[in-house]
Image 1 (cartoon, rainbow, N blue to C red):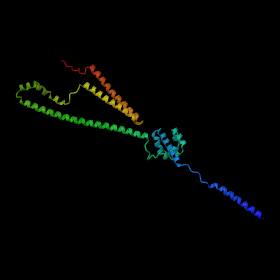
Image 2 (image 1 turned 90 degrees about the vertical axis):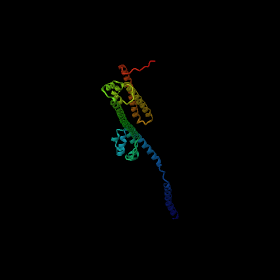
Image 3 (image 1 turned 180 degrees about the vertical axis):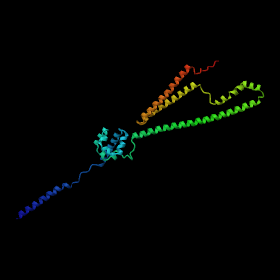
Image 4 (image 1 turned 180 degrees about the horizontal axis):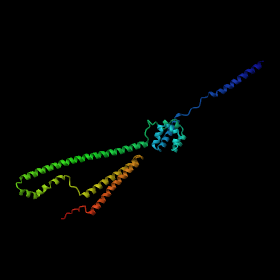
Length: 282
């Protein structure tokens, strides 16, 4: 009986030991989870690539997707943009978190294209404001000059009138009046009004004056166009074509002024409108 009891106790202990050995590996610590910073870095790269891809399309596309992120999952809306559709198919996480990848429409910073357009609008607005300011200043200067010229003319006429009045008071007979009128002093009196009106310095003849003015304006405008063309090489790519157009127009206008001055000179010379230069003989 004792050997049978011993065998029974051993049979009960063996399964317990085997179960204890099988439970020991289950108590091993779990494997370490992947690091979160690597995932964040991949997400940032995906976001940057998506924004670079959106820059290839009109700015309205990115704005519409930011306003309605559900359009990212609509294949009928994304179908006209094959590269964007392929990218979204490779990265389904964009549709799960569009605010991170596309940005919030309320707080989204303007992209480079919009910033360049804003800069261009600011430059054009500044040029328009400068033109208006120059026009207003020129008008004010012209009005002031006209007022000064009128006051000077009025003062000269008053002096001449008083002087001639004193001369006529000394004339006692008609013979003396006729003799005075026929004298050089009387002739100057009769033409004193036109002399008083012309207060500006004597200028060059009309054809020569206009020809020289056209040449001066043409040279200045052409040089300004060359300056704008040189400055366009140091600005962003979006503004460069506009500055090129402005510079080409300015150069064309300047060359047109110079060519018109040369044509006017040739025509004036052929029609005999130019005065012959005076030569002094010893």
